[in-house]
Length: 234
Length: 234
DNA sequence: TAGTGGTCTAGACCACGTA
DNA sequence: ACGTGGTCTAGACCACTAC
Image 1 (cartoon, rainbow over the protein chains, first blue to last red):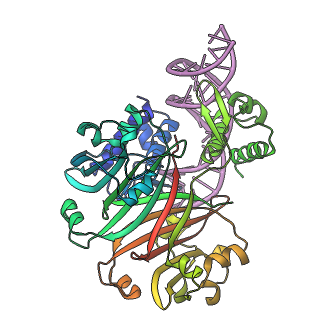
Image 2 (image 1 turned 180 degrees about the horizontal axis):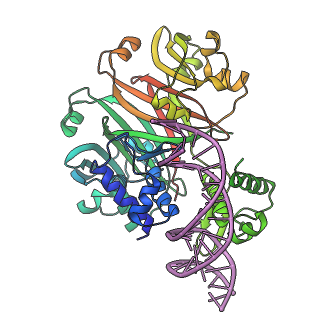
Image 3 (image 1 turned 180 degrees about the vertical axis):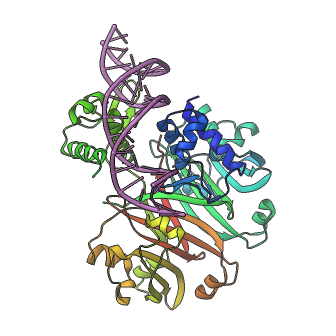
């Protein structure tokens, strides 16, 4: 483990423990140099990690501040749920509500570019952080790409497909909406009917532009914000 | 101009002129140290700029490569009735609720990277289609970029800044959330309190990464969805 | 005036890839 | 064995902020 990573982890731990309150100053770079007995550059590299995670903001002449609390799920591009939870050093868990082989409906057929006769796995999951439901998600993966889908693997689908199945996701198409929770969503997510929910439909594509899998995700609005930087078409 | 920015510009110019072919090596860091007569850190900061622009990729033990051109994230952006309305020749309208010069609060200071003493225009608008409110939006533009902001121009801010003021927006940073309508929003948008609203905060940036203006938009959830394609950055 | 982060120097050792 | 980028040290001056 590199020294700056150790320092970054230590600082993240302290922030999550509430050692520094929100909007409050982190120790100055000089203080951190003394404390960790390293050079300035190493301290700055450690702080760069936190800046990259949007956990702190630097202000010349003032100091380094602890920023807000929302989980930035996609701020650095595409990552899976457990990855993003890990980035925030939170305890995450996944519960499989159902996992079955079904015939795709019209919408899923279109998203995955398949016919009605090609079966797909339909996985329904709850994502928890620190014991609380944050995400309710339904995923569809064509049987073609994974002949079996053991319950254990379904828990971290993204990791399974990328690491064990060696599929590389090249890009993804997002559709994001605000919706009111219906009966099913309200029940699963432990929120009131009509509570605002961030709805995200993502289709993940391989290098050759074939759709690998599609997901419908419902995010608790208090905890999630979707972040993205978009280049202007030139 | 900082030294590392000068070097970055010089290298970008050379890449665009085709001095280094695609997939080819840039001069090593040591070569650049000799050439520009600077320290290694300055060279690395310059290269960091190019890495940030996705123009080069570094590979330990090998070197720094010129990457393929463009192909970044693109977006169809927000679509909904506003586009289809335009296509269907429905009447869209903008109402200016307020337009005043104010001191920026902390959040706006951070978004626009300005100090509390730099005044900004605060424009509050309603967007209507066929007489119905679809979007409630608040924009902030530093006085620095537009000495005056006549009411007529404020109606189409984007067009005004791009066409008449000749600013070119290079990229934008989006934050998207689902929220429940508060009292103010409910009143302006003619919806119930706690109705789901698609909240989008966008900061628009110029070529040199200076923020041009920031906006807070509240979309009627029935009519809007945000679409985007995101490249995986590995 | 003192403290902060931003920039910069001039060195050093390391792990990795290529020959 | 050698060159590459990754990490790290121990200094320095600057612009900006707060007092």
